[in-house]
Amino acid sequence: MSNLETTYLGLKLKTPIIAAASSISSQIDRIQQAEKAGAGALVIRSLFEEQILQEALKFEEDLAVGSESFAEALSYFPNIEFGDAGEHLMWIRKTREAVDFPLIASLNAYSPGTWVKYAHKLEETGVDALELNPYAVAVNPKMSGADIEKTLYDVVKAVVNEVKIPVSVKLSPYFTSLMNVAGELEGLGVSGLVLFNRFLQPDIDADKETVTSKMTYSNPYESLLPLRWVALMSNTLRLDLAHNTGIHTGKDAARALLAGASVVQVASVLYRQGIPYLSTMLHDLEAWMEERGYSKIEDFRGKLSAQEVDDPFTYERAQYVNLLLDQK
Image: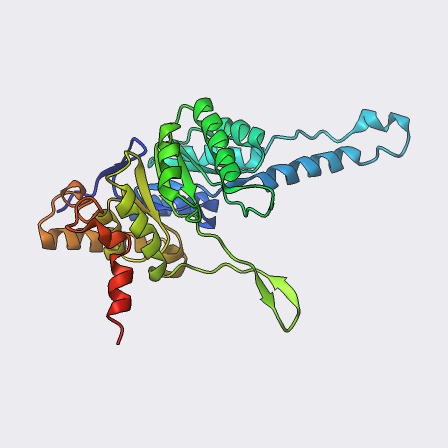
């Protein structure tokens, strides 16, 4: 039997398949199901700054109830405590008590102070690591690419200096010089990168003339972009790399590990196939390893990274040139 153990962000994992941040982690019994099915770890659904602001607004509205009745109304304000996203934090604490495998918190914010404050609060829940999810669309025409990168670096530096647990960053693939950004983040003390953040796009309903949005699941083709960058980064940087998006089978996981990924993150396939499907993916990965005589993941991790293949140009322009020239 092959050994599927691995490490990610300094954590020991029983398997290299991680349940990605999603609504699957909104119930403790589902998280327990993922652990039972063999997930090496789980990323808890993100705490969003919008949730924090919504709680603050609700608190202010509750305090205002009856305040206009008469002057003494202030003396009978409802007994409410604004817990700074306390419900989310309390739920994570309960989850930590209910499972043994590593839990990784996820935070998405846009105010510098919020990143730091809630990174610390998430750490206090007992999670093993923190994934920063800087999901934002740059729409300010006066903000340059360098400005965007500096904002990211400032946030990451502040968070890394605030918490003691390992920190990873879920990157967008749209930076002008992705390798440079990755190197800068490594220098700031980040332990790992998640490649990539999958941006969900709004749509327009032409019949109703309204803007719409819906959840769309990933497909295996989407794995190719992170696969390329995992292969390019894996032996160039010391960071752990998590391949995210488009992983639907055990063989998909093998491809990512061959490129040099430490782990893969999955979500869409769990919605489609159910959480127990994790065990099928792990069985298929193990069968693939045994067929090739690999007893552990380190026997083949990074075997097809850019530094290990005969022609590293393969991951840059070679495929593009060859495919176009071969067209009849």
